[in-house]
Length: 391
Ligand SMILES: Cc1ncc(COP(=O)(O)O)c(C=O)c1O
Picture (cartoon, rainbow, N blue to C red):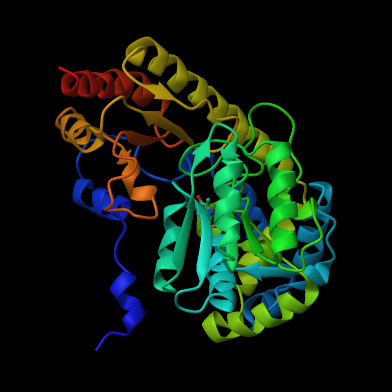
């Protein structure tokens, strides 16, 4: 009875792990979640109050599929400040940036169309491309992002789409260098390949200066850039955005209309109020301060307990550290870690060929959702589990 595309729609290993361990008292480095104690509930309550007192009818009414016009303006201004000149008519407000990725995929990909993609990459994007029956051209990554030689080969296959995570990639935490961004932007533009740039973590930068988005580095009518307020306000608000050429936005708005008519009017107005009252920047500063400390604590603990037994990335932002083991033991390490009350996600989950065995020597650790105490307790236990597999 199911449609063909449902063959490739399944629960993610992360969701399954979280489900089977729910209720247990684990220290979890597995989730992709922000720390809920940092959600700005008081400021959001005031914004919701203001919206419902002054504009309850439009806030509770249907609105335009493209999004609440003042919020589109505000997002355009925010992106222009990132170095990506944007007009309001180039912005589509979405229900989280996950929907932006899905709309972009659905608008551009027919079954068997090629997608050039970093491997490993963001699992929920892989699930979108899987559901659209895409063919993958995998691009391996090092500490500076996708390897140029692999990217050139992938683009030579004339994929429809190149999906990139230039900042603090989920899952590896790596950031694409400016040189590689420039080259990728130029190569994709000259090959006529659409670029889908997922910048969900842009503002969670703990070191160094922001780098220009890939979309700003070459003229490409098919450059699509996505972002979100999930990591800088709260994911439950479900407000994200997509930036593209005005004509593409019009087409995507039609597709969005089919999906859910529009992003929620109330949530959009609350986010706009939050921005107007100047809460965003101080809120981001709070996330940065806490997350930076946790990253440093986890890096320190890894150095103390795992030196010589593994290597790991040193992310300049985002939520994840990527650990590489000398042997393909991540699944066995997970068994040992779970016996000790610690969870993480084995890295093979994030590869395009998830059952093909790539990345079996890697693990993803979320450093923002555990508390400092949990990091200090959990990393030595994880190290024990790793050393156990190494005899
Ligand atoms: C890389 C990346 N892109 C997009 C998203 C989607 O987030 P949202 O739909 O909440 O904006 C996430 C969420 O974890 C993510 O890690």
